Amino acid sequence: MLLTEEHREIRRTVTNFVNNEINPYVDEWEQAGIFPAHEVFKKAGDLGLLGICKPTEYGGLGLDYSYSLVANEAWGRVHCGSIPMAIGVQTDMATPALARFGSDELRQRYLAPAIAGDMVTSIGVSEPHAGSDVANIKTTARKRNGDYVINGTKMWITNSTQANYVVVLANTSDDQKHHNKSLIVVPTDTPGFTTSQRLNKLGMRSSDTAQLFFDDVVVPRSNLIGDEGKGFAMQMMQFQEERLCAAALVLEALELCISSTVEYTSGREAFGKRLIDNQLVHTRLAEMQMEVEALRALTYHACEQYVAGEDPTMLASFAKLKAGQLTRTIPNDCLQFWGGMGFMWDSIISRMYRDLRLTSIGGGADEVMLGIIGKRMGLES
Image: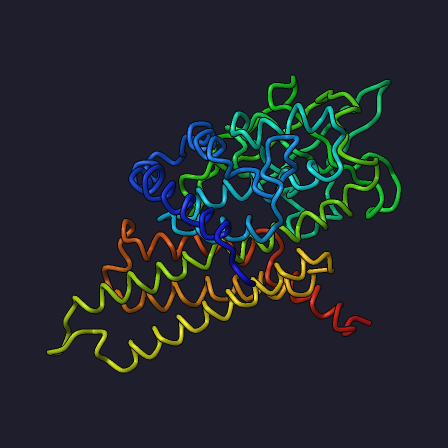
């Protein structure tokens, strides 16, 4: 993927934002268990960073997805996984279908404020019994006069306690499960909508994550995104950006694991020499760096295919799967080289070990990616 000066400028802008507006406060936000999403998103929105590939008529920059990918890669410089994930939900998970298929009125009311950073949004797909198995969701949206009446629950929803609205995938008919789902915008101040307390997670500590409850939540049918019954297909399309985003977000985070481990092992002596001077240590670190660069090339290639209007499903699944694998092995192996210091809660490597582990689960587990790849290879009977 050839980078233009505009790509590089977006990368510089995100990097400066991370260095000045996020990293100095990460430790404080991690300890608090939440970060000020409205404040951070507004600052990012003022710089045009929340609508890079969104239409200009709604405040976006109107660039192709490669520019968003470069921004996502730079968001990975944050010294935790929580905030890049929260931003990715806003830009690549909750709003792509709205930008493509929403009515003009819906986009003016909800997309434009999300791009500007005036609203925080989240995506409501997963349920307690249906994470990767999207087709098995149970939440319903039944038609009543000119409204939808929504009942059900959603689980593990990022940004949910601070969100102004949630884009909800719900069953709008009793049709076949791949044709009975719709995406609906649900403002969080609607009567009957509530959230649990923030969930106590292994990692992503400063990301507010909760369970959502819908008890006869009434929203107008004009809040439907696109056509009724097309929600599953739209969500599958939305997943391609989510998976490319996930792969891009971990590149710099994995390099942070490596560089911090190089620094630590260079300053730590054992048995009369620096740890890094052990062949096992420095050759494994070199191998890790090669693996990250290979993932970068794969992710860029998938992005090129997507921008060219081709189906990126296979390559995006490759990239998401490889990202999940590397976020298990690289932080784990780096932590081993830190020894006891790596086991301390506040070390950067233990935070990355906890935070990046989600990559193998969220947005389609590794096993789901393997299933998609196998199906595309014609291996499924």
